Image 1 (cartoon, helix red, strand yellow):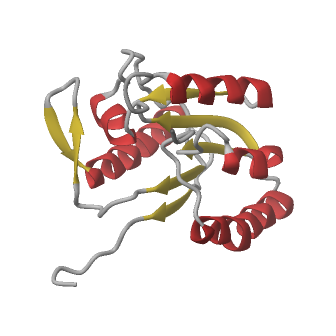
Image 2 (cartoon, helix red, strand yellow; image 1 turned 135 degrees about the horizontal axis):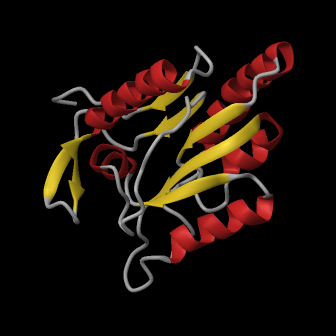
Length: 179
């Protein structure tokens, strides 16, 4: 059984270590930026461990594991976040479902109360693909979640102030029809 919905690959490792880390570290060291991270770190918290000194808060998402132990990944993610000593919250369910429908599979309300300064979003499918929402009984398009986080950012910036900058590290599967 897999340990998480996150699947490490040599390409992901290369992007994280050769591109993302030097870029984030430069901004952190030059401007003193501490990141509020939103993404899919997986139960092993690969990004979080690598960037721990630069992160002040984590908003993580984890899918249900295959039956019969659907909750094992979210429980492991939450446990590992606590052990690592990084403050944050972990939502149970797909990023799209939680962000658009405003709650996770446990009924935990999703809200963004401050500007997120670092999004690390790795979609394993096309940006226009659909995502099923078992609890709501409907399908969402992945880009609807991106639209929602941008609206949330604007709302936080306007009503609660905070940094006027943020970074989105976005990986999507690019597929041309007919290939």
